[in-house]
Every structure is written in C-alpha cells, then in structure tokens.
Image (cartoon, rainbow, N blue to C red; front, top):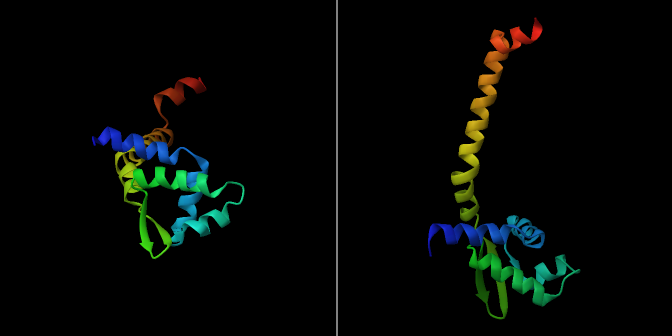
Length: 117
C-alpha cells in the first residue's frame, strides 16, 4: 500500500463524526465493542462494527481478542504522522508569518506609514 493510499484511508477514517467519537472514547483506554455500543445508543451494534472496521483498516484501532471479548485499543501513531507531515510544517509557517508581521508592526513598516499619510 502506497503512502497516498495510507493517507486516504486515514483521512477517510477521521472524516466521520462517529469514528472520531469512538477514537475519543478510546483515548482514555481500551474498550470492548460492547462498551462502545453502550456509549452510542443511537446506533446499532452492526454500525459500530462497520465503523471499527474502517478505523482498524486505517491503523487507528488495534484489536485484541480475549475469549469472546474484542478489546479495541487506540493507536495514535498514524495521527502523529499526519501531524508531522501536514500540521507541523503549516503551524511553523504560520508562526513564522505572525512573527514577521509582529516585527513589521513594531518597526512601523512602510505599508503602515503609507496608510497613515
């Protein structure tokens, strides 16, 4: 699977609010599928399982079977990879631009001086 395919699966998994709610629930620790179903009474078990499958295929959920129970664990590494590739560089660029704007404003940039005259 190429990096683009992995990114597509990851963004698809994160695109649905129910799946994001599931990930939020898993942040505090592993949950059984039954526990996730109980926390989302507005959707049926089959739908919960379908959402979990999408999260698992994207590498965001790791499943551990203990007897009849299916424990779902959050794997945050794919989200960290998104941060490293997409958010980090853009945040650094935005911080640089804000810093530059602050310096220009404090120094009385030529654009500001023209606007005052």
